[in-house]
Image (cartoon, rainbow, N blue to C red; front, side):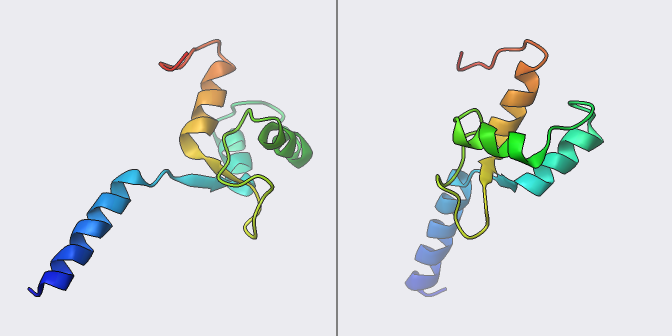
Length: 90
């Protein structure tokens, strides 16, 4: 393989490890309904407020062209906090 290809593969592997999955608010709504995290599920405006006040850690503030993008680990940390569970970082 040419050296440039090896460098590209090394960069790709390094970058893949650093990516944090992000969820759109529509996916968060679906997860809340599917897992019955809150019944009834919060309205979209409430989820936007959670983004704005920093409860959900977001990729961009204000939202970019894809709308609010919430880091997946931040969403699950919030969901667990509803049961009184603390994260390892607390």
